[in-house]
Picture (cartoon, rainbow, N blue to C red):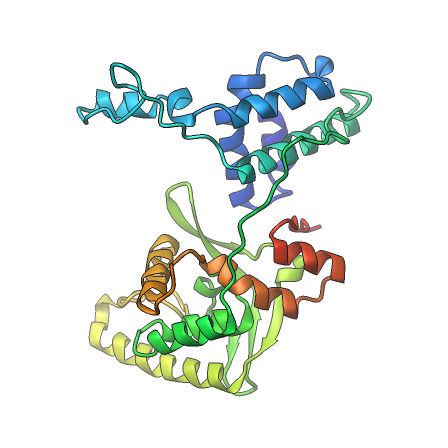
Length: 312
């Protein structure tokens, strides 16, 4: 698995996907399947592995509570005496990603001539995956924007909700990608946190790189936002850090994606929502309606089950 990720996947997938696969291997594949020889893998072996992974508490398996206790913090569950398992089981989404990773790795093993066929290719699991998708209704979106009207990031929410931008796409948007004269934006890069630092990279897939016309309210919001940002730049003087981004902190630096999540949830709560929607799910419905993908793929995108198409 390490060889596959290092030599095969390195230039094929996004850094965030590679990080996810490394984490899945470290936490699940190596502990539960690492002793199995590649040539001995059969569908029942993989099915048993996935079922074991789903029923393994990751707090216990990784010694998280024991690490807290070793650091002088009070034990909360697994390290208590008597032991109290917190039942921190992986989600269906994690198992789905794990299944896909195993299937992809074994398919490359077939291509390399290491095994005659892929034992995970036709594997069907007993449980059904139902990714959670909580879109905002039209009224909820209007109420959210009304609540955010005086917020310095109002333009971000107006653009993201109206155009269906992903969180990383909105945070990675540069002024050079915005045409305020012709009223269009070019979605070309994304901002993510990887390996403990913020990283700019390509958007999720080929079809995610797109040109979108700006509705009049979004165009007005962006113009007002630029005026506000110029005022902030003058106020900060030499302390302003210019990244060329449309949406920044008060000193010009990129907005931390997790901070935007928290900010979004607070706005939802102020707007009277239960705060269960995420930025991704809130903008997905609009993204689906404007997608150039086939009807069947748009359906999968809206349900959250579509896999991004890798770049050639």
